[in-house]
Length: 139
Image (tube, rainbow, N blue to C red; front, side, top):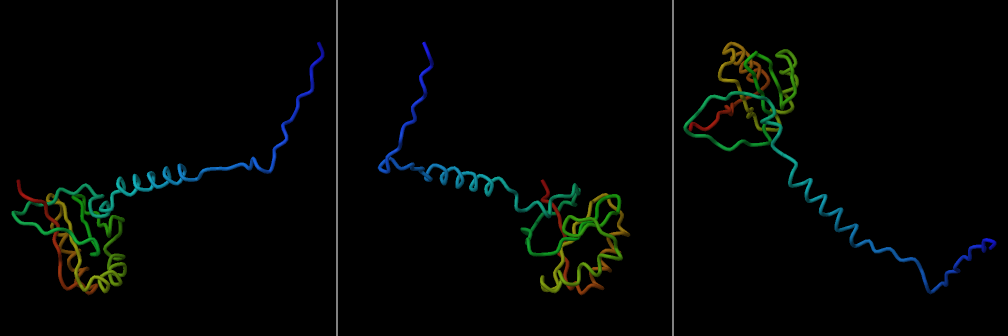
């Protein structure tokens, strides 16, 4: 039996192709909400593994402050990015101006006290008027 040619169905103008966007928009919005809820907005301050000293009273961190961190090996970080003491002064000047002279300082409890004092001197030389020292709550 010979193969019959396939017949194509001719579409009428009344049978227009229709695509419903509502389910796709729902999925995109759900994904957007999921990413907003799971993204961590406060990673900048807690990115470094510092063992902060304990204090009986603490104040909630202000995210607009420039945060200078010193780890236990003496490395200096500005807002989570490693820097040096010589570069820190120039990097801090515009940040201090926008933060009204307040700078956050987080230093490892077992770190070098001399490095912390040097960082405090650089903050003062950059125009920093007040320090917000980072601590953790005492248990």
